Length: 172
Image (cartoon, rainbow, N blue to C red; front, side, top):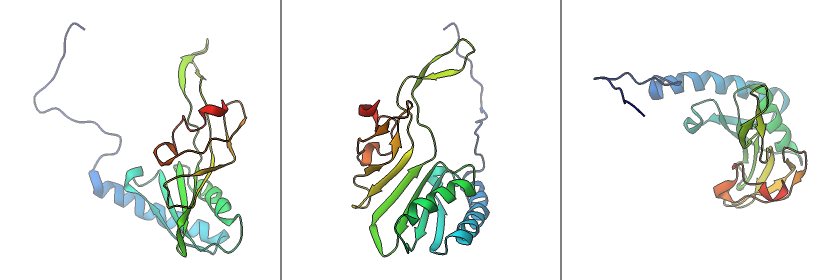
C-alpha cells in the first residue's frame, strides 16, 4: 500500500439509506401485499412481519393457525413466491409457539475459485431446505436439505448455525 486517502466530513454511501423510517415505509406495504397473497391460498395465515434485522424485506415471520399436516411448509413456499426478496421465512402457530418451521430459499455456497469465464465455482456445500424446531429455536432438525451435489443433508444444525453454510458440511 502506497497511500491512504480520506476527506474531512466524508459521505457514507449505503444501499439502504434513510435509516429506520426508510425501512418501515418500505416494509409496511410489502407486508400487506404478502399477507393478502398468502391469505388467498392459506386462510390460516393470520399475520406476517418483515423484521428490521432483514432490512424490512429479507426475513419474514408468519403467524399461522395450522389446520392440516404439511400446511406450514406450503405456506413457506407461498411466501417465497409472494415476494422475490424474501430469503428466510419462519412459520409459528400461536397455539404452540415452541414449534417453529423455518426455511431458506437462498443457496448458501462457499466460493473461492472461478472458472475460465470468471464465474464462481462452488467448493463447499450449497443447501436450502426446511428446518423444524420443537424448543422455540434452540435446536432444529433437518427436513429435506441438500448439498451442491444434490445429496440430501442429514446434519441437524444447532441454533448457532441453523442458517450457516456449514450446517450440512458432513453431507458434502
